[in-house]
Image 1 (spheres, rainbow, N blue to C red):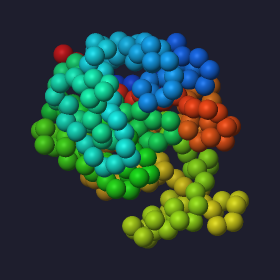
Image 2: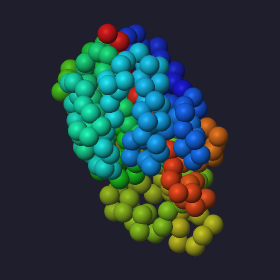
Image 3: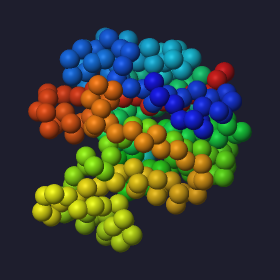
Image 4: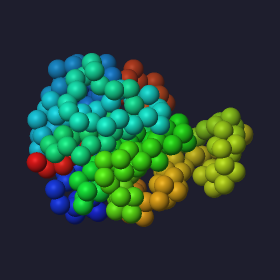
Length: 255
């Protein structure tokens, strides 16, 4: 598992950007696939998630993720939920100790947040749709409702597809420029005509800054480029694989 250096220094908080290593899944899911929405054997996903929960010091039934829908929607977790009752949202916040909250990713940006003084944490799934529609700002606002202060919130971005591997079409570029012409800075020309390379990580960093957060760390890792270490939806598509694994990126308050 990977950690952000700043979040790791905060007392009373555990976090992890889990890689694909250390689990029991096989094939394209090898080996620490945490995606309950994948077609992996459910018992293997359950075991993988139990291992991740243990790494964060929580019981397996207190290791919570979402039914993600590429939205700006945020939920507040006050108690455990089941796989079947997990909320449809793309970010989650809590102030409850020993309740791990997380998001699943396989190219999109996983963001973990913490205000150590207030004891408030958050996790957000920042794909391009969520980031564009405001999931980062919505997560910060939800943390504030629990007592966090924007000036104290630290955020970290885990493994994400990087610009050199993220080609998009002209309609994608037009959508971002229509939202804000300054978003042009997030695109570079592609070798293919009328296409561009999108800097999702740079865009996320821009939105984090616009949200008023001054403590931000990007781990600088690309999911697409390291198949032995990370899952990647785009890479699996290019390889014509039948499915792909999902990382879990999670954070918890010690009890």
